[in-house]
Length: 170
Length: 202
Image 1 (cartoon, each protein chain N blue to C red):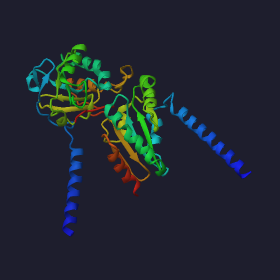
Image 2 (image 1 turned 90 degrees about the horizontal axis):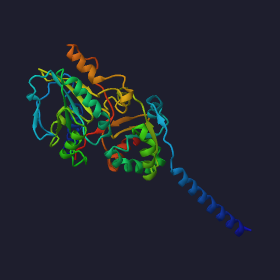
Image 3 (image 1 turned 30 degrees about the horizontal axis):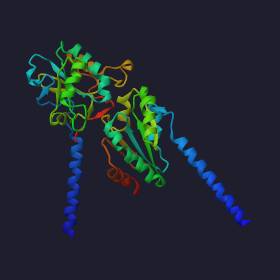
Image 4 (image 1 turned 90 degrees about the vertical axis):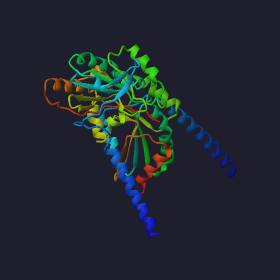
């Protein structure tokens, strides 16, 4: 009886783990990216829920952005259990979302959440996101309820992790 | 031990203060006087601002071949030159990118692009990336309107309020500035921002 239940249990585990894997691969292929105006994005830049958010502004056409993406992906994975969340805000041209952005995300197997910021009033929201941001990308915002810092620069993993650590200490 | 600590402390202070001064002193601000510069144009001739004796000022645009935001603004840069060169404000375009860091932004590539698009203005190569840091330009496209005779920076920013889509423009920042200057008035908006590509250097 005991042996039988072990078999059933193993079988069930196998079935479920397979199923989980399957659904994961399906979920990875995205077919749409949600588009936000600045007004819609703003709440995501000022959450106060105990988490630390790493928000990267990028685009598929931006060479240095594409180059630094793996660092953000790695950070998101390594710190996922440490109350850290990575959000990738794409500034791709809206008409290239289907042709470039979505295939890019699937091809590179990007796991961080990607959203599109499409808001014509750049002069307003660039200053609103950070008064020192001139509008060049890549740019990154790291914040939590007690600290907030904006970086108009490129990162490698080490640099990014070091910056993140200054947010996690307190 | 104390001494080492003191040195470390001092070094930290120095590092932090230089980091800050680097951050805040980046290039010309509105109201500053700019230095003359001499750069090579796509026709292989050298161009200096001081060569322009008859003009009232300049629309200096940092731009390049490869940045989609620059490309999206090329026709608008040409239109600016067409409209304002005859009124005394010619466009001077400068590619600030180091071609080693941005493939396709080399001097030969610039010649090709200028010919393709029939640029009506000089398209200068910032060889060695020496001029753009003086301006504090950070992205392409990045516009500086400068007035003579004092070579004063009147405006820093975007061409208009819809960099991605020319059909959605509702405010032409650069034109408004030059129109004001031509009318002998003070420009209303002297600084605006837009998304652009970071300037590429090694």
